[in-house]
Image (cartoon, rainbow, N blue to C red; front, side, top):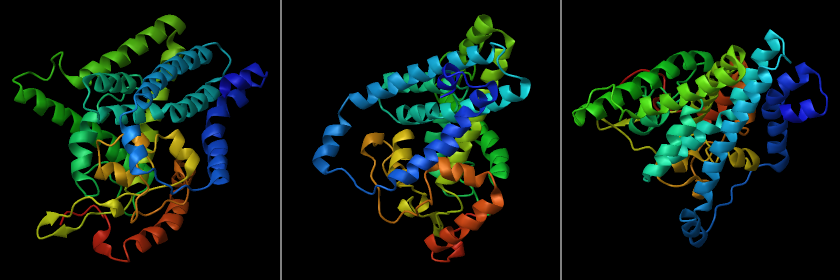
Length: 344
């Protein structure tokens, strides 16, 4: 959108804010124009889609296109077109727009194929988030909707407080998990088989290439893009399980069920985010490819797609005013089903 604005001769400030307008304005509006879609595919079609290589190839292509987009955007940022404030707004907006790279890494990181997991490392490495898949698979899916999970937001916790807990928590959890995995193989942490380090190598190569091609301004914008992507995924995590807890039953956590994830059935944003908003089905069937995820009964429903709720949560009093009545209704007023952060 920024390149389109540039081609149309728009002023620098309009080009800088274009990514923010695209996500929070255009995408949210389109979401509510198309509305919700609760339809699911038939079993026969589902079996065909599961084995269709088109969707894997699509994720590979998206990874390449996003890599090219980051390079072009950083080159544009280094062209001298923007002032300092405009550069910051532009970088933040680009991070929001490029956050689907993490969703590509999320999808391929669950795959059994080594090739797919390798592409996941590349996708995550492009935005400096190489630790994500490890903690997500070994930590989040185990402890989801409990106080032990740094990626499950607690009742009454603002997005900003959550970010201060979630971002370092996920990072440290990934380092611990990878250190333990390598130790079981008799390998030190700093070994070429370290999956996090492999992805970091992609990040380092990207940063070096941008610096050599466009200079330090491009590197600064690239760092800002990565930071913005991290925060955008933090917003997605905040949304996915906000305030919901799996109860303790006979001394054990109940299994993760549809009611432990917030879903959104808005048609357009589900296309944008590879059906991530059908989150309950993903936690029930982690190996299920994104194109076959179902809209399941029993899951609480968000008032908008992710672009809309992202804008809402940035103003915590407004977020709490909207989501708390919906949350209390979803748990039937049972406070034992609220994640308050207190261990049982």
